[in-house]
Image (cartoon, rainbow, N blue to C red; front, side, top):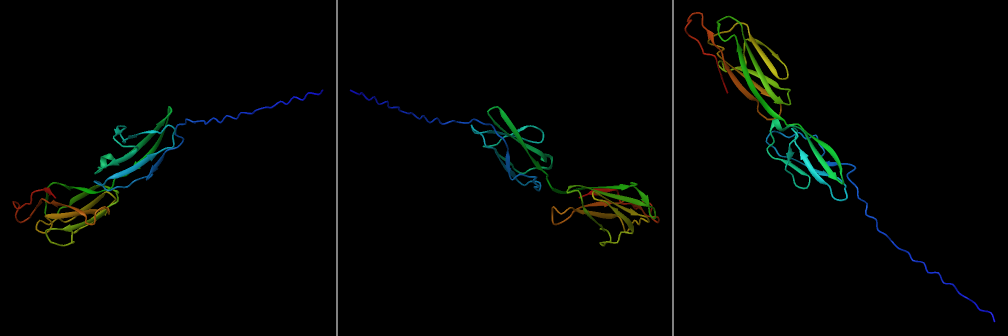
Length: 217
């Protein structure tokens, strides 16, 4: 008698789900910058990176101090000119840290200062008025006017650069040029900022008739 044996093999397949832990490989900013706010405006930017586990985010200001944020969202309200610079977002996970930089350039209208040299002159002598503008952008359009005569007739030469304009009056007149106004505009505001210089010009006929040197807004 013949006996037949049957061998049955059973295969077991086991599926294993793998969880890959990984730190950030790149950091994205939205908007990416550079940003050009006008002073007293609010800026914001969202920092994001693909991480597992989820990244933690830290923003630092240009001085390196930590800025309080929520889920990587940077917001600086009423930004000032001294807050301009590079803001850095640090994305961190699984011992790996990546940093992305947001450059902020704050624009502001000109702050004007005026100086007169010499402080006092006699009628017919030369006097120089220098108008300086601190602004961003630094390029300014300067305008001079004769407040006393209510005209643009200055009786002098003008030399203007981006941040400074010099008016040289070769023949100062005590009754015609006691108040000279300088205006500067860098495009941040529609109207120029102005400042008036009051000249001390002694009249030849009346040596005691003078206009005291003073700077007023």
